[in-house]
Length: 238
Image (cartoon, helix red, strand yellow):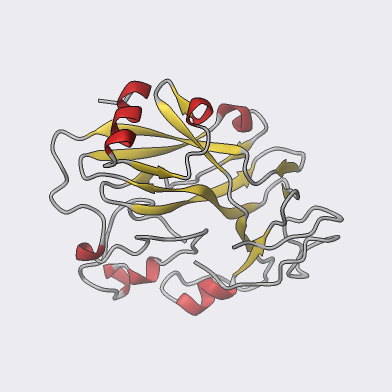
């Protein structure tokens, strides 16, 4: 059963579902979803000539990304063909009887901007900000402004509470994440990680954490390797 706006408000008021900060509930709470806003932090993938990235090598994964924080009043320009990790401004807490679905807003979809590749779920018990897998499938650069409504969450009630919700007890990799997080797939059992580590989906098993990089957004790529930059813009993420 998908929660309606009435159900969402009731669960928020009771405190078992949390979305913070929810600065404008009248605007953000839709008939059956909640709009979430774009944060200031981004992980940009470097242009590289390496043969491949080994998912089980944390060093390779971290060296492949640079962190950028966009200054107040500035934009992050997502160029055609680019893929970056962003984050929601809001932090969520999902109770054990709900699962949240991360969706893109149709207004951005009509500009060819996709907000998640595969990480479309927040598992029961997940706490933290939500990492967004942003890509531009179009032919023109799109300016993304931190604070804009970029994605939405819908909530489905489970037939019963999850017996083992996402969290520390199951070694979940992304619990309480803040900002965009790079892939931690190397912690999965098949790569020799903790046998109790979470095998879930996105923010109850999504992928994200990275290496702070240079944050200058003026005139070109902050890595010097052709990233997603707005000419003449300044920036870097928290």
